[in-house]
Length: 420
Image 1: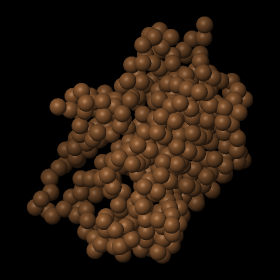
Image 2: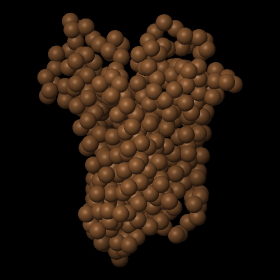
Image 3: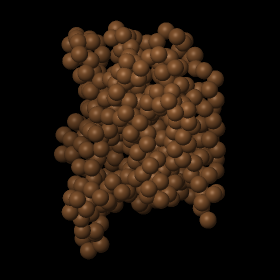
Image 4: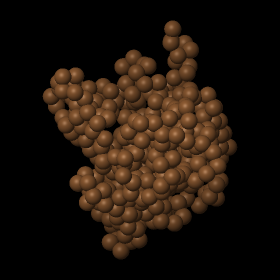
């Protein structure tokens, strides 16, 4: 029997796609779970009140602004928020969205036909579903079922707590998820892998800074390990196409810095807290607030679970992913995504501290930013659980329950049984 620590691909296969399946040759278990996810997001599209509390009206307002005056580099400081009772008219409230224009330009043509927010939400369901499909196809091609059980992986992939929530609303995180899926597919060896990587990094840069940072870190770590190990050379097209992707993605922030002296515009009038009303925190105090908020905002039902339960649902998949480092079959991807987590979390914390010090703002803690790294975490965790299940047959079921608990479905069941 193959031992856990000897699981590996031949070195020549690290960058090769698995010939076992055709491009869309997903097993029925994956297709059923993908269909369930799409059905769930569609239900949320129609039952969730508009606008949601996750900046949905603000995002749609930028879409409207791009429809009226399309531009690659808008003047964010002049943008307003639409009236929620009439999505063709402006209120007097200033908007605070500061993301690149690509997502909004993609949605803007819809305004030529309708201002119904349901239609805009449906476009986002499509983005989210396509992203998940790419992730499933890439993993299914790369790994055999004995190493990566299809049903378990599909369940873990849809179990990022905010995936269905964000997937059912107008939010540029859905385009970021598509960029994340493209990178995942590229480094797992989908046909044309180098082009997938380039497209992912360019798309991430023109969608969201957090996505660009996290995915660039993953790509740099993965390509760096391949270069140092001798699996690729300096002339490999994966390297130079990745560099082109980074350059394209970074161009937005370079231009913004040259224009305003910052890589991102921040609406200080919206986020500034009067000095007398601010919490007074030193660095350790801010760190405690930041990570406690991270835990409590991890579930889809934010602040709805006891701290210990929310912490468990967050730590279990992460620790399972870390444990996968012992298996050579997945180690390059596990390390790359762990690097992505560390880099994004470090910059996220630093930006949050700066925002607190300068503005008194304590709203920077958003766990949905990490959706871009979830495919790699789900992959690593799945392979760990698959090996654990050889000794403990309940490992798969227990993991699925824990990972589903912080999702929309888990939150609904939690409210039914424990919501009072």
